[in-house]
Length: 308
Image (cartoon, rainbow, N blue to C red; front, side, top):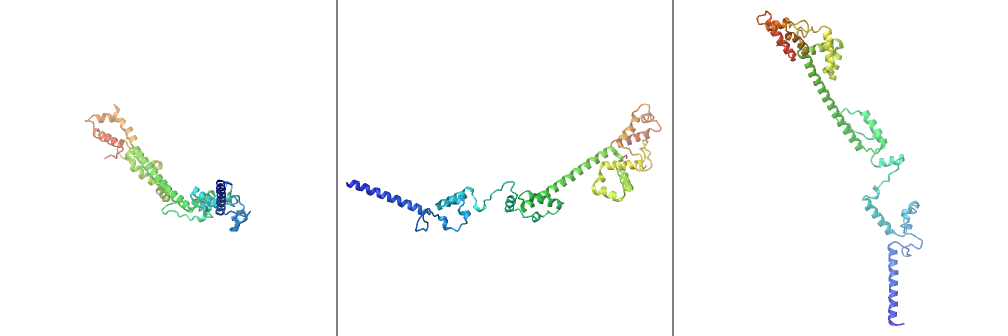
C-alpha cells in the first residue's frame, strides 16, 4: 500500500470517528440512549420523571420521548406564539356545554350565585332594587357578568334614568307653558278670573285631597283640566255672562270677555245703521262718549288685556 493510500485511509477513519462522536454528543444532548445516563435502549428520558400514565402516553408528550430539547423548544415557541403564560390559556367549551361554560365564566370572575354581586345603588337615584336583582339574575345565567361589570351597569342605568327623568320634567314643563300661553290667548282678560274660578270649583267638588293631587302631579296646571273646571264654574253661575255693554255683572269676571267674545261684540261698531254705529260716529249723540269708551274697552279685551 502506498503512502498516499495509507494517508487517505487514516483520513477516512478520522472522519468516521468524528461523525460517530458528533452523533453520540447529539444523542447525549437530546437525552438519547446512554448507559452512563441510566437510559438504555428502548427507554425514554420521560421514564425518569414521575408522570401519570395518561400524561406520559399522551401523543403530545410521547412524541418527545427521545427529544427533551425539542419539547423545551416547543414550549418556548408556543409561549412566544401566544404571548401569554400557558397557565393563562383557557379552552373554550362548546356552546351547548353548560357545565363547561359555567366553569369558564366563573374563572373569568363571575360569582357563584347572583346574590354575590353586592351592587351598590348610587345615592340620589330611584333605581328599582327588585328590577336590578332580576336583571343580575338573568345576566348571571346568560354569561360572564363580573361584579365590576354589574356595578358598571348599575351606575350607567342610574345616570341614564336620571337623565330621562330630567328630560321628561323639561318636556312636561314646556308643554304646560305652551298650554298656558294658549289659554291666555284664548281667555284674554278672563284668564286670571277663570283660573281662580277653576281652582275654587276643583276644591269644592274634588276636596282638598284632590287639589293636593293636582298640585303634586302637576296636573293642576294642565290646560285641559283648567278649561274643564272653568267650564264647571261658568255652568255653576260663578261667572256672569259677558256684558257687551260693559256694565259688569254679578260673580267673577263680570263684564270681561275673551278675545273671541270681544271681537264679536265689536261688529256692531262697524255695522252701518246700528244704534252703536250711529252713537259712535255722532259727537253730538247723548251716548257718544259711552260708546267710545266701550269700543276702546272691547279692543283691549280683544288683545287679551284687562280693561283699564
